[in-house]
Amino acid sequence: MTYSSAVTYLYRLQKHGIKLGLETMTALMVRLGMPQTRYRTLHIAGTNGKGSTAAMAAAVLQAAGYQVGLYTSPHLVEFRERIRVNGEMIAESQVAQLTEQLQTLCQPDLSPTFFEYTTAMAFQHFADSGVDVAVLEVGLGGRFDATNVVTPMACAITTISLDHQEYLGTTLSSIAFEKAGIIKPGVPVVLGRLKDDAWRTIEQVAQERQAPVFRLHKDFRTEGETPQQFSYRGLGMHYDGLACALEGRHQLDNAACALALVGAAAPHGIAVTAEAVHEGLRVVNWAGRLEVVDRRPTILLDGAHNPAAATVLADYLARSDRSHPSRPVVLVLGMMRDKNHRGFVEPLRSLVDEVVLTQADLPRSATAQELRVSLEGLLSHPHVVPSLSDAMALARQLATPDGLVCVTGSLMLVGECTAWFRGCGLSPLRG
Image (cartoon, rainbow, N blue to C red):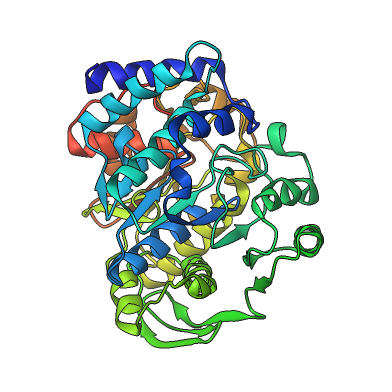
């Protein structure tokens, strides 16, 4: 099997959609020889912020000298981004070999989903690579997510907001219950910025499982206005003069959760120095999240796709506007059909001068015309440009060299824009 044929096979599994549950994944782990038990793990759930938190925790651990696996989703441009060891993507040959191995093991009675396949691939690759620690980002929810076959040293739940309601429930409490499913008996859980009803639900689950709870602003915190200059205090650690490479004030919360998560793993022999914390945060990379990819005009890519994330983006744009009050701001917006279009745009509309509606090259993507109808009355005379390349050309023109173009609404759109900048093609079947 070649890499190309392996990825084509995996993408075809997406037609089966999402099937939450652990039976198939548990059986597959047994057939693989339980690779997820051959290294220590950290497990991270949350509506927003879990990817950034995972990237920071992995960067700090790597700076401390550990061999670190990092499993995240979705990818922006290339499938291999999902599975990394010390920052290096899994090799194409390994994807092909593991896909073939998993196909054989699944015969005749197992039919894993796309995400179950990729999760099993990650767990086996980490075992084959001899990692010391694997940092795992939950794909969807937590309780029935394919990653939830691990017993981690510690886990984290970063935020809870309304998203994926068709799978997780329509209230913050129901969504919190699903994400609290990653809490294991006696395993510490780190909690980020949560509203009271979500907090009460998670607290009850943690109490039932006798899991120690460490909460942001109570047991650990950051001090400072920006991630470029802050301090951290909590769980027996105190670091001053920290600087994180990721933009946006929300990254202060994510950095706090990452450091608390690493601190909660200390009883398992995980030791990090102040130097490792400083270095890991300084060099961490998390593409497609408040990422500047070009200048004149400034092109900002942000994978925000729900109202809570849009509020974070709005805060960043508002602060940026105070530094550059006269520059035009152009929003290039594309979203999936099942997202809350109006709730996403509401916090952003007063901060932008022009809006260009476009679409990702995916069946699930709302067309630019569908977005226009969905947002009617909320935006004044948006430009409707289905082609991303044409949308970017228009946005650059509207922004002028001194302006800002913000591409947002979907990680898939951001991924296609990233690929467009790199001058490479992108499969419309990305997960």
